[in-house]
Amino acid sequence: MDSMAKLAEIEQSFKKEVETCHDIQHLEDIRIKYLGRKGELTTVLRSISSLSIQEKKEVGRQANILKNLFSDKL
Image (cartoon, rainbow, N blue to C red; front, top):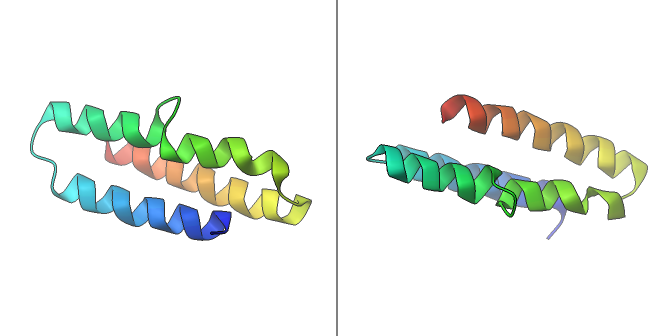
C-alpha cells in the first residue's frame, strides 16, 4: 500500500473512532493511537525518508494536514 493510500485509510479510521468516542479516556487513547510516538501517523512520517523527493513533498504535506486536523479534533 502506498503512503497516500495509507494516510487516507488512517484519516477514515480516525474519523470513525472520534465519532464513536464517549469519554475523555477514549479520546486520550485515540490521540496516542494516531499521534503518539508509535502512532499510525507518526509511523508514516518516519517512513518518508525512503520515498522519492516528489513523494516526500506530497506525503509530508498531507501527513502534516492530518496531524493538524487530528490535534484540532482532539
